[in-house]
Length: 443
Image 1: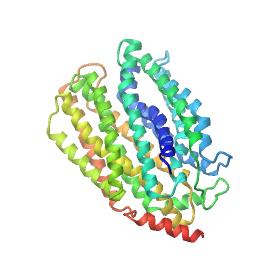
Image 2: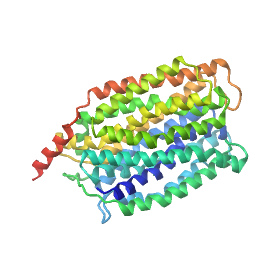
Image 3: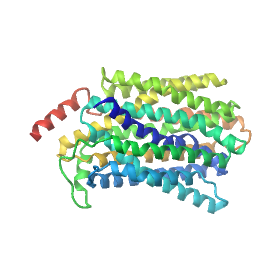
Image 4: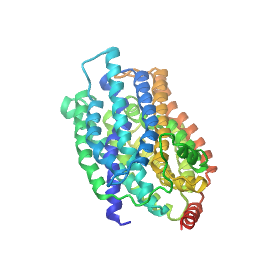
């Protein structure tokens, strides 16, 4: 694969991450400090929507695996879903003139609509990684390209969201300002996604077609796939527990450091560091297994949490350094996850004779988004449990509780994450052997 095609494919994650990074970095904060929802209510809405998103991912994947058009099976979803997704994203950040139960109902409905349309576009896009090539190194390169573009999107979202809100409403947490920022991001994403459709090609097809709605073949290839399940368990615990750290940043800067503007700088700096970190892990992946990268990243992450637990970071620059350090591990885990996931498809095909890329990606995204939802819900409930009240000075007990949340949940998650990967069978060289064996069997 040439770099032009790799770059064009990776650009799709810039579009997707204008949406995803926004809801990851700002949506919960928008709910509490702009819309005025309680932390518990905001966390539960986020959790329900994430679980809903996860539930429809495998259905979208199964539909995409059965789709046959002159443009391929996955690419049409990217093209025709772009505009509806943009409209839903604007609605997600629209603050209606409602209060009480009506406001909660509207916010939840808008979130569910956005998640549905996001899955319709993102699942087929992610599954293209497995359909464009079977070469493990090329897949790692594709994953790296996606992560580089997602990093750029994260920087854009982190740097631009609150300044746009400030320019529109005169305050960095104004609801109308968030809506304008969302519309601008959606406009850019809508221009990028059709370009991905035009420049990508589906080269690898499924070896066995699965007919009808029962999809027993899909489940058979997944249930016997140890490589898939160890990845999912490790990734699920990682996401559920590490969400607490990511979503704490805005609150930590605003209430613990009394430097709300510093949060924007910290998020942008941590995201921008990925432009150096992703190539670093891409180079490492050419010398060690992706499984080894996963385990090394877990060790780096755990070490950072231990330091944070015992050192009181009272200056913004100290927190910036800490977040950049943690980004090394976070990017390493994410890189390993998305690089290993396509390899589990051949492992399942080798075990069962059934190949279903989009269904596997959809099921993986189900667990990922359930984990994200649980993480957001746990964080919201934990925040309420330590006595958090938006837009007012927090008590010392609440601030101490915030820091405890930032350490305890991620430390549990990263420990289980590392243990799960120890049982993954895709050690260095195993996937290459499986691909060779499948090729011989197909000749």
